[in-house]
Image 1 (cartoon, rainbow, N blue to C red):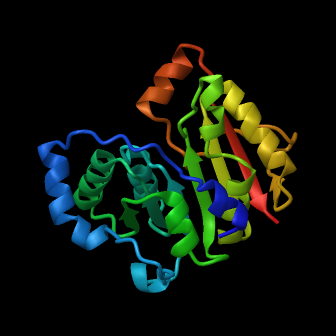
Image 2: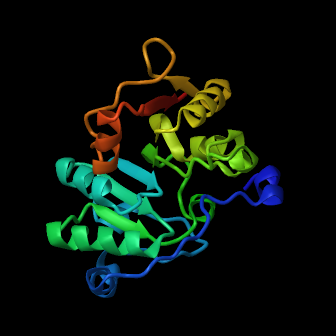
Length: 228
């Protein structure tokens, strides 16, 4: 961990715990032993974790897990590693994983910054996804946004050369900030042909919330930056 990250104690979340449904509770009880990973201070061996060698997609803050489960279903040749601090979301994803027998998914219920620093080996990840992170839309709260210079620099150490950091937001001012942060980050190059925002890749599914917003004329901005 860099001194800057130690001093500022960057976190990827503000904890908001909600009530578990009976289905989420059952999934946590039955599926966590199969697909859940406990936090330790030791690096993961992904080959051992998944029982095979495959490209790894790391998703930070997967929400209720529906899109991650969909991606894992559509890309069985990839392995997916999801981080989320919202327990009901973890329970919902585990329910979907169990229902779909998605052996290419592993889940952690822990802060992403600690996991990335302690458990993710350098140069091991093919794609990192941060979709619709908390926008902290009030100006006085903008400093809490996770996409900032020190965080994307940390992520760069975990990506393979040629790996991709994929960001998405539906807040325009956050999109502008993200583009500024990524454009000035020395470890990345923009994959968008015109050097701005990218078209949504086919692998990122539209959520119901996002689809509703698009029909109302709301914008969504994707950014695809390659590790160089």
